[in-house]
Image (cartoon, rainbow, N blue to C red; front, top):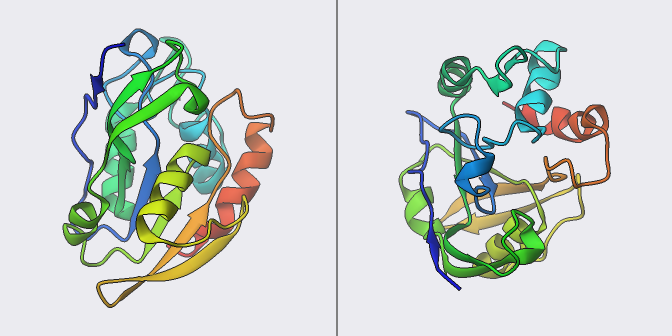
Length: 188
């Protein structure tokens, strides 16, 4: 099976305080925009809309079945939220976007990523695979969904939040997912 390399560079706004980590993007054929969480049926940008604007369609362009990428980027820069994934190379064992069908060939250099963000004190993982990769790397126990745990990275205290997956395959409504994300985002 072919090794697939990550198609995007980390998104790191100046002064990033929060790092969001997923597992790996879906296949390009599922993208509606060239940015993170690009699948139109993924709930991440709807979660952001609910948490920050009380409107799940705030970042959604329903007419064109895409997201408002420029608005998303401006918002992430303003709020100093960085985004990347925990794998830079994977094999899709069943040709799906499901985490359970991803074999991580090359994990992201999480240490190097955090060193680029000296003000970052919070990380959120947005699924089981991302949580497993990160907690294994840092040698910490994973928090339960909706929970958090503190750990030290080169003398810096980091809070890891474990949030529900934004995938529609995760059996939870977008409104309920947003209820999990809201308290974490409130800390920004």
